[in-house]
Structure formats: C-alpha cells, structure tokens
Length: 235
Image 1 (spheres, rainbow, N blue to C red):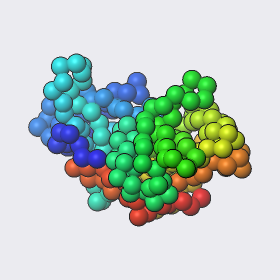
Image 2 (image 1 turned 135 degrees about the vertical axis):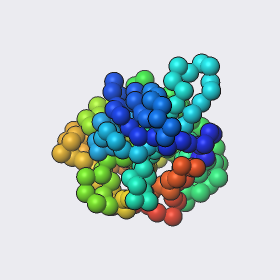
Image 3 (image 1 turned 45 degrees about the horizontal axis):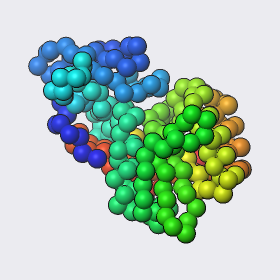
Image 4 (image 1 turned 60 degrees about the horizontal axis):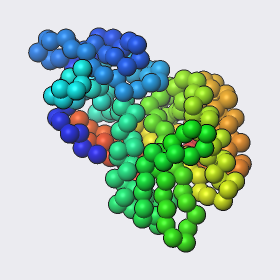
C-alpha cells in the first residue's frame, strides 16, 4: 500500500487524548496530527522521536496531518496507523499473494457477524468453507527482535477471539492474523503479562479450531507492504 500523499518528517512533541499528537516539522512549524492508534503505543510515543506525517488538503478533515510512521533512525520503521494493515492486506488477498488463503477469489470487508461485530475480511469460494479473517496490528517490542500483542488490555480483542471460535464451531475457517508493523522484529509472541485474559482466550480459541497467521511488513516513507515470504509464526 503506497501512501496517497508523500510523507514529511517531523519530531514528536507529545501524544495526548490517544488520537492527537503535537509535532514539529523540519521548518520549525508546530502542527497537530491525527494519531490513528487506540493502543498504548508503548515505546513509540516518546518526545523527540523522529516520525513521518501524511499531509492532506481534505476540507472535511479538521487536522491536516496524519501520523503514519516512527523512524527509529537506524534503518528501521514502525507503522503506527492501525488502519494500514487492512489496506495492505486487502491488496495481498485480492492478488492471491498469501499462500494460506490464495484459493479464495472473493474478498469482502467489514461484514457483520457475531454479536454486533464486523469481521475484517470474509473470504469465499465455491467448494471451500468460508474464511473469517480478523486482523490485528502489532507494534510493541520490548525485547530485540520480538514483536508482541497486545500493548494494552483489549476486551474488544478478547471478544473477537470468542466470535472467531464460534465461526470455527459452525464449520467455517476462522483466522487470527497478526501483522507486525515493525521492520526490526522477526519473532512474535502474545504479551500475556499485559493482558492475561486475551492470551487465555487465544489458547481457548486455538483449541476450538481458530488458526493463527503472523506476517511481517516492509515499511518505508513511501509504502507499507505485507511481506508474504515471512510468516513469523513463532511464540
């Protein structure tokens, strides 16, 4: 997924109210950017961090910048926009690039299911069980090379696992797909010390037939792409 508008570098002043970030552009101007990430962003919102913003001229948007990346200034990036994984994955799914799901030719998004929820992707193909795919963006890293989810307690994520398990019980494929939006990680694990209930719910869902896929990403200020060659399915 290529960014629609060229990103511009900035320095983070502060993130607040979860969805707002004050930043300093390279020309010294201070701007407020939208932060499309409801998580804690542990380790990714320290004042002074180099970040990348996407400008917009949409008159319907109050904020004229969106925070997209953290630049670790060592050649690695983290994508902080939680809407990006679904956009990147949709392209990969429609192009049949994910081997585990390539047999499905119809890709639908945000389909209602469960108890008032919407599945990120519903994949269908005559002769195959429907595939319900829930996607989570992974940005936490507390140990070198290890990506973890979640970065805060997620009752919503726990609910999604239960609903996926219900789909599996009905004979469908149910897939929990974690997309690691960090280029400095090659392993993945659940952060049970942060949310024990989520970790327990995952084990229960797995025992009931829910599949797990974990993919890395290639990230630059130009684009975010799913690395379909790297399934970091390690815990």
